[in-house]
Image 1 (cartoon, one colour):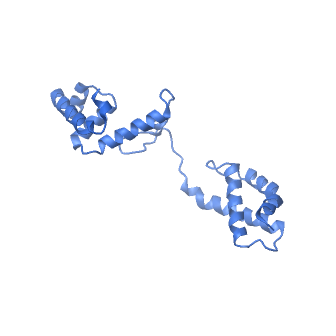
Image 2 (cartoon, rainbow, N blue to C red):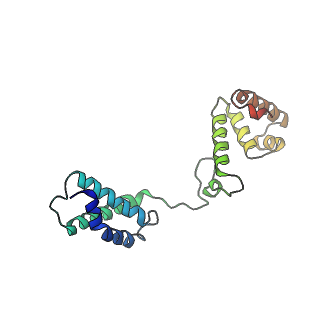
Image 3 (tube, one colour):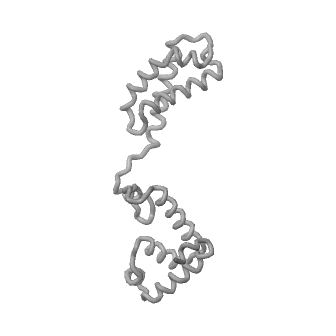
Length: 173
């Protein structure tokens, strides 16, 4: 029996099983579950484990595989609150979700540039200043926050621009 014949033979029952377990987990839907069973069928079929097996045997094999899959993967998922921190800087899940005011591609590109700049030979104080500039603090606010004069902030800012300008010409505008 070829693989397509096996799928046609058990498709309806596998769809019913995936629908039944659709609410079992908040992380996968019925299409994911159905796909997992089809993948299991494929692997078993390649190993010729379904030769001379009944329809019932094949369905039970998929059913037990799916139950085991859900049990094993259940603890790999973690529910996050929108207020949970996602990194050491205190960035929350809510902060990472786009508000659609800026196209997502622009946000991702800007964040990549930010990470390249921060990881490109800046000193500790320059990184802190750059992060505050990135978060739209003024020069005076940065000075107060870091307990340094605003003129030192300006000097560090110029040094940051000098270091990264060789890679990012648009920053000199």
